[in-house]
Length: 244
Length: 336
Image 1 (cartoon, each protein chain N blue to C red):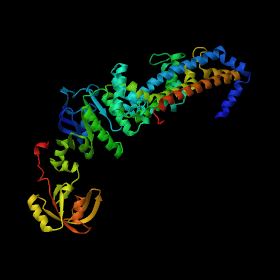
Image 2 (image 1 turned 90 degrees about the vertical axis):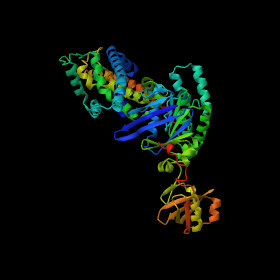
Image 3 (image 1 turned 45 degrees about the vertical axis):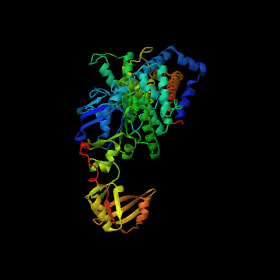
């Protein structure tokens, strides 16, 4: 696992520190990184909310077809991402049957990334919610807490580590995503070109140092994000563990 | 004062509450006692509003709360497994009810400190529930429930998850607390000893119905039926009737046994039995016997009586009830 990462890093610094810096801060490269991080952050936040909501409905509500929906959640994991892209293109592309045209727009990227990263939050929150002690919520209710207050002050804090963890994974996955955005994204530099597409492009025009440099930048962002979230999640969890 | 009238609750075909009517006087500590599946927890949870009744009504302090949400019933509820807010400190747990009522900070702090002192947890303010023992967690849960000045305090098997020693201590402690605080308290338990120990009044439930309500002494001495008798305290079957083991007298001489029985006159008569085992339990001695009918039962005598009798395994002895159900002042009015 470390070997390819090391090789990548070595390549990215093939022209020294300034070569690396120039490659990352080249306007188009920087723009692609900015688009990637911004869209991924929005996607991660949307997933944090929607994923928690879906997990809640799947655990707490009973409705017809619940098992089917539960199974469908994993579809984005199972589906080759390029297939997702085709599906989204046919749904929101130029010949959209629903009249929504997201082809080559940032909302298009958003939809694509939200689709492929949906399962992360759902699947990390679901087991925690299943294990959650319902009596704790009843206790809050008996003390006068409304449903919303109970959710906010009692349920959410126990879900927080799982939500944060799932959101971090969704974000990390989103910034590296290629297949699902390749068709619907449009690959317009400075607008909808994401970092992974920029890297692909640089390889095609034979600039491996640029490609490797942006890759390392992506890697660093992903690593820092996961690390920070890990610390955050750890902090909220540690309090519940026995430290006596 | 809590009044439950005609309460019914079904889970599918199973009747958890079958037309339950019960008055719980203000300021008492009442135990709902029964085996598992008797409906005692369902009744408590219905009073709390955590279960909806299929039929019947619940009045707390003169206010009909049958359709009222648990938030607005003015109750405090304590769960068997503590239901602690694990991510909050002891202080925040106890303050929860007050802080969502948006009380001034100083008032909350004072009240929480007072309560923690009452439950013996002062100095634990900044601990998390995971850092407390089971008994401490339950006392925290009690303080949390009391913080909102509930009209009634409802305890669902509060000591069920604790070991025997802590159980007994907390039981005494709860009784003293109740004598200080005087809040109308309902305690669910399956442990007859616990009920006899702490409660002013006991309601015995079986199969979703109330078998008998009364103070511990009258329930023990004047059980309305065999179920109440065998659920509260131990019983032996002697000559077809249920008798408390300590109400069995043993005689070595048959004629003396018959003569004595003629005086006290219970329906069981004198039963010829063989001693199978003599067990010394400190002050008490339990004598396991087998009647000539093959029925096994145990008699409980004091050490002094056992020494006088000097019974050995295999010896024949004549048993009679000194205080059978017929001799009890059976009070049909107590049966519901």
